[in-house]
Amino acid sequence: MEIEFAGEVVEWRGPAPFFFVALPPDAADLVDEVKADVVYWGVVPVRAWIGDTEFTTAMFPREDTWFLPVKAAVRRAEDLDLGQVVDVRMHVGRD
Image (cartoon, rainbow, N blue to C red):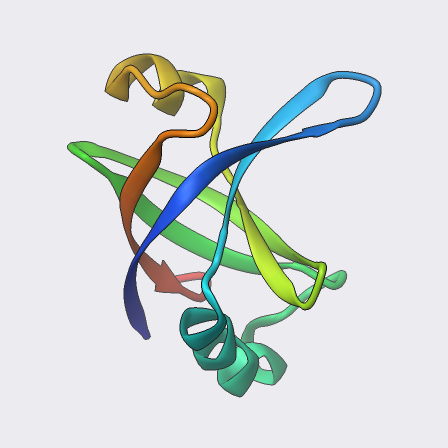
């Protein structure tokens, strides 16, 4: 399944800062429809694109949606900053 959406780059502080894009409700609902087929260890694997940069990661549920981790390499390649709204395209699943 392919999903496209726009979202804000947010920070979640833990032992180290992590950056994510939270899925909007309509995109999160689409993930919820297929999660039983793709989820492992509570996360959903995805292949995502922000700008020209492609990356793989795994989303996890938080605050009634899914959070897409944005790797440091992606942030550097696309010159992303906290609070910036980005367009995301992603393929949900392991293939």
